[in-house]
Image (cartoon, rainbow, N blue to C red; front, side, top):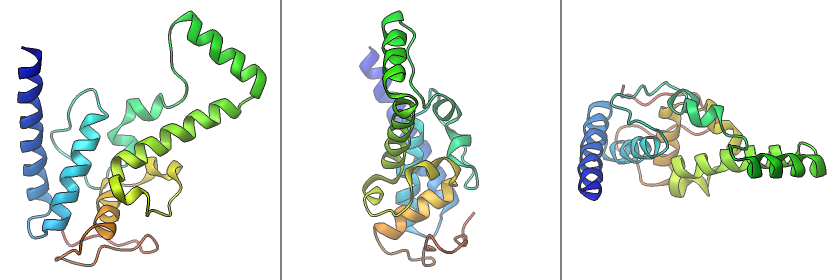
Length: 161
């Protein structure tokens, strides 16, 4: 039963992603494809799916729980004691390493294969807009038919949305 429910939710989420992408980027296949990938990645990192998406929203706004809790987490006494012992030995290095790991993990999930080609620091993923993430994926994947996806050095918007 649970498998069937997950299957229905997944197909519904895919249909929602396709509909949103078609609404946001009606004339560009490359942008639609990458918008679907970003929307699905965001939904996989959230407790509840995003039904509408604002291209100008930051990743931190789309993933508020993940952003707020990207440090070490755990509620068992063993986990807390372990965290305290590591912090006592290494200072705040452990905390910094865990935050950097969380940032890199989110960046890789959102950018997909484009993460390896990205020159951005992983910590900047939280302040980037959904539009910026989609454009970076387009830049590193296939040619865009609507407009050239802007480079990281230019503050431009696509002609959509």
